Length: 142
Image (cartoon, rainbow, N blue to C red):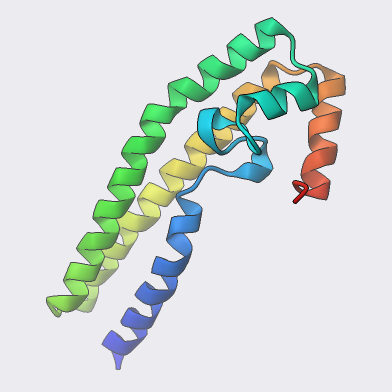
């Protein structure tokens, strides 16, 4: 019975974790180069970034890209380890440990994304922040 519950949780997590592993578009980031909807050009145009701000934004997102890629690899490895643990009939305690590893990577990814968002917001003017926040409340246009 416990293994059925654990397997159900693993299957549910495997459907949501790929989403969690993606950059957060609602944070004004995501997609190639770190900014949502068409990359840096879209957000730069939307917020009317200066050339200096564009340079700073690119540096912020480029600096985090390598770390995020590494974390995605760690997430994939952690998911594979958990799946292998289920197939190998590991104990509940062992499966809990493997599941905890997924949670730890998710935490690190979220922390990186939030620090990136904070750094990006720090280069914006009050007007740009207001415009960005207004867009995030509405959500991206389809």
